[in-house]
Length: 159
Length: 159
Length: 159
Image (cartoon, rainbow over all chains, first blue to last red; front, side, top):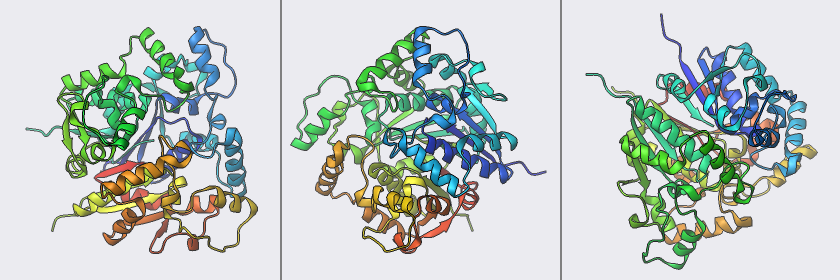
């Protein structure tokens, strides 16, 4: 009766390439039979947004944040060489040619492998994001839950 | 007689939002009774600067760095949506509305909880920052001290 | 017969200052007798490029990526205060004055200390980088090899 190894990732970044790195490591760790958690906080929450507009009651500021932030994984920009939005297109073309999975598929694969995807409730509150706007089968928690996971983690990363 | 869990954070980033994430995790871990260290290096040192101008002898380059870098936590910009300085104002308005603590208060809280705040002496030397310019009750150390802490850490993050 | 401590670093960033931080920690850990691995992925691979142009067969897109990305450690920009390329010059002048080693020397020192430098094969494939274009004595591996190292690591960082 050996205990499972544990990988936890804080995904803070809202960059497409950094989120890809997070999900590639997470999927790799899950394939290796680790228990894996990705805790999405700040701009990292954008990776979990549904790509359609969801009707929810919001304050003026919440609406502004909602409009300015990318709606879902495939709308995110690159951390480098974004070129006013052309960078992600280039990277995605190259990825397609090499049969690499786009971020949205990496997220699906993570869900199929039971990677625990957590949305940081403090950030949701601050930015005015509602549960209806995020993907299904997401967990909702705060920093205490993250720490409870991480303190027994073998691989803990902040991305 | 159980040993305390240990959290160490390298705060490299000079972004307000990333520093907030670092201090939220640090304060959470301290509340959880972890021994917590934040090692401030490179731009992360700006979080520890006093907000007033301190008279110290500096070379020309050191003066330039001193002027160009934000003087203290509340002068730092955002990693995303900085909008020439409007972003931090927006975030702080929203935070106020939700009774979230600004970074300077998170730092105070960390000090009250005995989080060890370390300033990287190599960076201070490079950028020409003097002890008089930083907050009181800061430790001063190099990478060796960081590693001695981190090699026994349960949660080690680079932010 | 005690086991060696282990430090693993994912170097994702292509910023000069972040790569410096990674190599300073790695060299420190190696001096402390840790087994150290730096796994270079995405833009972090640029730190391992040779600085001359190497003749290799590439597709159009691969040529474009090759031209746009910095050719080697000393061509990389800063994460903050890059000032259209003046920032790295300023930092390097200051480093010289303080006898701090530039990144290319930190990489050499890491190789002398047997830090394992790994190039992520998936990224090489995506961006069209060939082994001939990278420094000598580099290992080539994927995320599985990284995780095998990291799951037993004492200090695991994502930079």
